[in-house]
Length: 142
Image 1 (cartoon, rainbow, N blue to C red):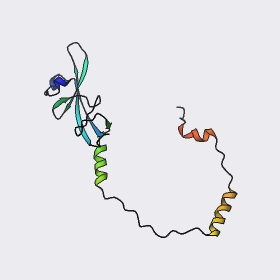
Image 2: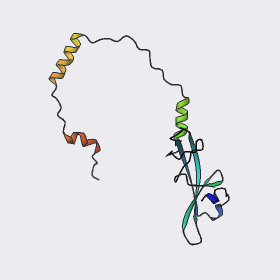
Image 3: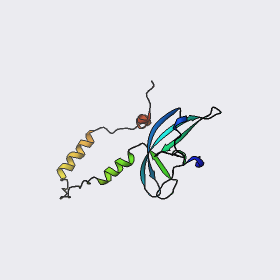
Image 4: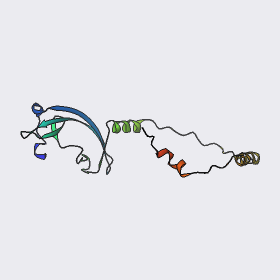
């Protein structure tokens, strides 16, 4: 596909065109970007189906096969749903919340500790069973 990477204007033979967008993040340098693609579905003379990815009017290699960071040329790139990079950039530019200043710490009194200990003694201890631990992972039969 590298020999056709610069060609444009192949829309005449497309049987269907699908628009998809992806967010990318380089795991090496941290660069993030988003790209929209027009995915053209074609059928060759032998009847075999193939697709072409078109970005900015140019046919490009599939971003799903071996994405490359344009910042550092690394191939360790994470592909995400669209909008992830933009939302991360927006979050980075939002003013951060400043925690309130720490005040004096109040130590519990002996009477409060005695009351809490008495409340714990009155409760029955919970005995864990394996089924209790596995409950969040069980599916309901449909």
